[in-house]
Length: 79
Image (cartoon, rainbow, N blue to C red; front, side, top):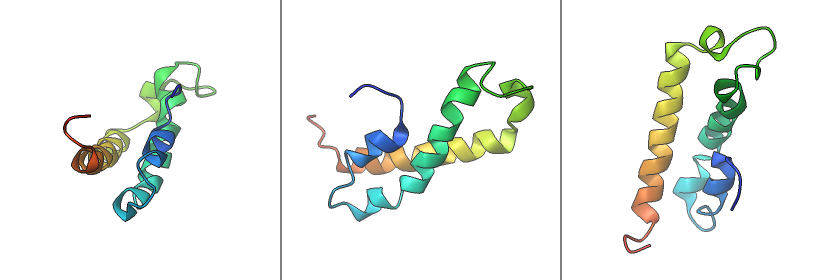
């Protein structure tokens, strides 16, 4: 799969797994960080440094940790 969408990656794990389905909103929020935080011109009139706060970072990390922990729990170890 090509791309950088956390939601698209999550969708591959969702069928039949309620826990992963509940993390869709977290994945959507994480996807919104991709362009504006990666590219200095991703936000009109501002840089990522000026636009995002420590709280934004902490929330994004917490969302990513929930997704990774849930995915790790369901992916077979020999994959």
